[in-house]
Length: 68
Image (tube, rainbow, N blue to C red; front, side):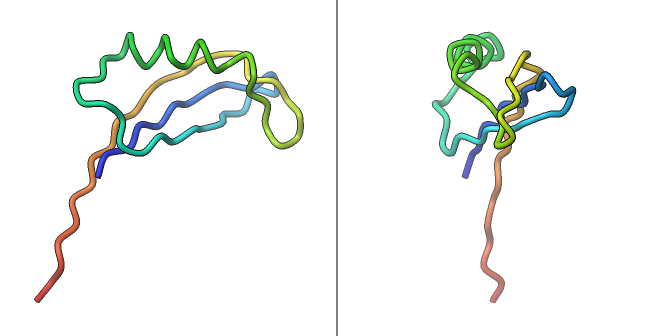
């Protein structure tokens, strides 16, 4: 299973994360940055604080194995 985590900075100098399951194969840093820029204007945290910057994108791959 793969997950893409987009990390943003808020106006209160904290971070907020958005996790996207099963991102497309071969995703580049530039593509993730462009997507983050498109969604930033509509994001606020639960306290109403605005998102002011995209920090980074992290791709995580998880492998599960049942023990026998």
